[in-house]
Length: 273
Figure: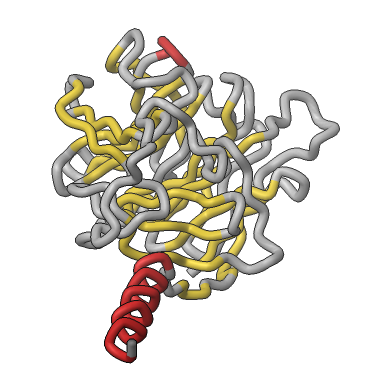
């Protein structure tokens, strides 16, 4: 009886350990206040993305939804450098920086294609050049992010991350096993074509940290979850403050080692570490 009890206890504790995932709290470190107010003409509502230009030492942030919505450029401290009149010039979804070309890129809604920005001497966007016309993403709303190691653009659709090369060719994909560690294995009821409503469904991030490359926003539990890009299993959990705002689509990014959430009411990107 004693042996049976100990075996059952060990099994229970092991199962609990597998289910439990230690969380690391992160806190607010800075803000990027976007231009205009909700009452202005063409103000925008949802944040598309934030990226960091490591050569110019500047942040670039934009709204999603219309070519006339605001875009903004900030210095490393979060001071806005661009004026209120700067726009995205594209119905923007994702943004990324390519170290090889030293240029800023993005993907638009649906078949708007991929584009690159022309910057002036102060690093302010002045024009765009559509480099890949048509649809080169799994869903019209997909927000692209960049894996500098493999030189691939990543998109989330349902429970799959799709990986495109710089020529907009689909090269690979990985299934995300939501909330599950490798030791647990995949859920037997897993459906790769269904959206998990506990998570932001349009945006993912790439951290560059081995084994924790892919990040997703858990809107139900107020967490950022990091996954292995090769296996799709959970490897790390970051707990957001109670004051953080989380949305089911857009409004989530990673830049300069900082996790960003867009507060739609206050119209600002809030950075966490």
